[in-house]
Image (cartoon, rainbow, N blue to C red; front, top):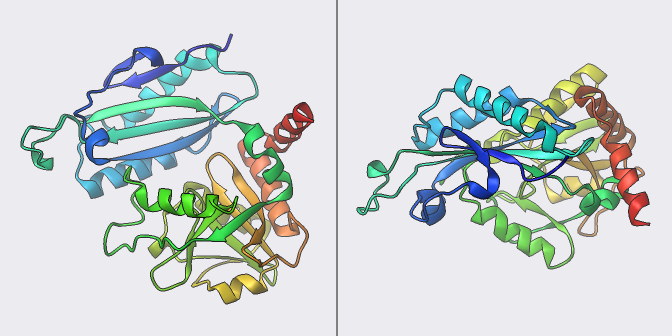
Length: 305
């Protein structure tokens, strides 16, 4: 029966309500940490190794020693999953979080004196009903005044817990009932606050260069699936002029895989939503994950009718 889930915290698997982290942890005080979110479809983890690989690349960049190896992190995740299997709702989607902070903040408040690191692995349900209509009919994006941090300030390829840049963009867009589309400091399209961006032009996928965006695991999955389907992919600068010429748009992230976009400000794609290329990729994700989230979405919409 679904109930309180188990989490992993600093070497122990415990019920989530018993998890305790010091308020002096640098993750809380300074946002000093890195994280990953791995999707779990009906009890099956999707691309776990890719997410853990990126987690450790981020750790290396921010100079945090997790205190456990990649292999141990993977084993801790699988052990926590095993503990949770009887408590996960059948057929449901979950986000599996891997959070690693620099740990307890020394009274000197210097990063080098902090530690040991805090390691937290947890399961949180995805509220499919909250995005069901958007998934079937497309989401609206708004270009935000908040620009994406340039890599000259902090490397965008690292998945860090300091998210104020993306949060402000999220709030910018929410004021018009939209999700965000951030530009880089040169005015080219970057990404959504929590998802990568793609458009379709002449049947090919266009996506921003990875230099100014997060190297999304699901984005890489799109590259692989597109190659399998014979769909060309081009990494390039994308301007608002290009957005006006697009046939399709979609965004990608771990929980949603590929979500169609119906409008960006006043620009609308020329193809129906979802467009034919987007639909082929959604179908490919269903096959790749072994999970038909389209049916889950339709079921949630029926329940809410």
